[in-house]
Amino acid sequence: MLTLTHHLIRNERDHQLDPNLRLLIETVARACKSISHVVGRGALGDAIGTAGATNIQGETQQKLDVLSNEILIEATEWGATLAAVASEEMDHPQPIPVSYPKGNYLLLFDPLDGSSNIDVNVSVGTIFSVLKTPATSQHDAGANEKDFLQPGSSQVCAGYAIYGPQTQLVLSFGHGVHMFTLDRGTGSFLCTHSNITVAADSNEFAINMSNARHWAAPVRRYVDELLAGKDGPRGKDFNMRWVASMVADVHRILTRGGVFLYPWDQRNPEKPGRLRLMYEANPMAFLIEQAGGLAINGKERILDLQPQSLHERVAVMLGSRNEIERIKTYHA
Image (cartoon, rainbow, N blue to C red; front, top):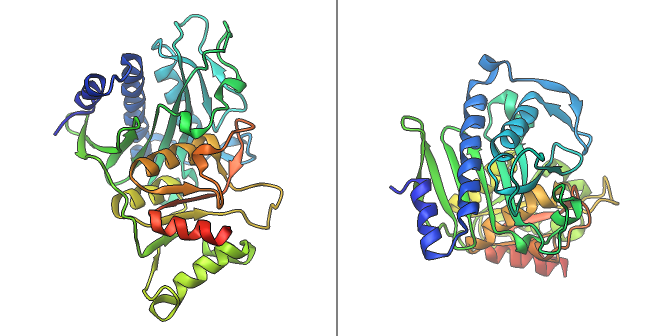
């Protein structure tokens, strides 16, 4: 099995991967190993519970949210690969300190997706996205928020780490999706799945059914058809899966197909959705499309959306191509 380092060197040779981007991803991977260790210790490390603060989204921060955020920043800020970082847990981007050399990349991350599941020992993860600093950026003090506002199609790398029975790292540079499993004995990520493909058809879907009364008509129609099973218009039975951790739900889809839906609903009609475009939707959409699936907000391709703000929210529907095409047709 190839190690992550060997895989990155191969990409450097075969796809002209920038050596600085390779170094950045190796650093992110090391940070994810550290987060995996902290998550794995749980209550033994006094890391369970709330941090006594809320983030910019108004959500209660968990201790592990804050700790994971600190681990990622401290690991990546000194390596001369970044101009700035942005996190779901921070109000504004954080430029690289003046005491460190700067690079040409921007790193965005959700340090611990699904953190509300920590206390019940359900899989959580880290989602990350990498952009190039715009050529027009002239900020000696580091990149600003405007530099981050690029469509998802501009990502040069996206990935996530999932902390479950196994710690796995999934990433893409735009040349397919590859999965690496952490060998806890050696501390190395080893490539266990190459060129992952999402099945075009599936009989699994993930959605929070408790919100059904708030959905728009196209989503209700689609889910009602699935629930009707083999006696309904689809002519087959479907199974529902819902972990309430986007990393875990998307990981299942990459592994065995299916669709994930977090649609707009009427509880907050002024908001286009619940998930964050920059930290969650864009990197996951990049991975799903690289694996042959589709990702939309209902009518539009997520990777084509032009962000208007760093913490912008969006509806997300992604997974098996034929199912997402059907959902898009219903919205049209």
